[in-house]
Length: 184
Image (cartoon, rainbow, N blue to C red; front, side, top):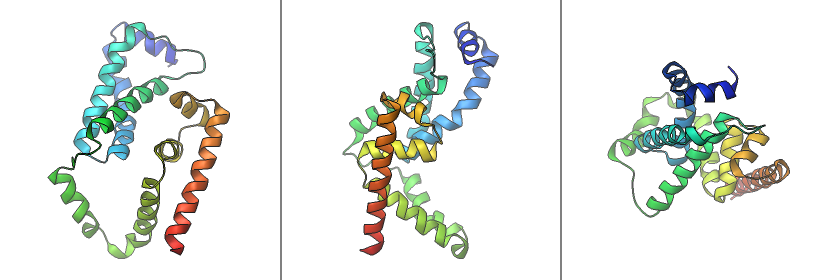
């Protein structure tokens, strides 16, 4: 269905369209929040708040040419995640369940089968954590969320050229960090 029609039907209170919309976007919004925050309950809260703010802003929303609904959703979510980090920057917010899962999850898998993938993943994650926030954000949107340059530019409020330059710099710095980690 055309996104403009979806918006109009959502504005009119069409519960069937909202249910389909919610089911289509829920996992995407949740996964983005979870990858950024790494806490299931907080990611669920942010996902719920994203949809709540989306519904509240519907009456005044107009889909501009070249924009997509998910650009709007991710912009809402991105602001909520930033707010959460500002409020919790210096707190130890990892709950007991998350600590347990992180500590024992590797033991539940076949160690021989997953060793190489775990090493690569841990190296990349560790390197990503050393990047400035704006570099982390663009790499995660581009390569974890599979977003296009135009969509990322819309979310970040930048031009496509500036977004490509930012992505280039982020990948270059990520490569440098990984090389430093491997070569000592």
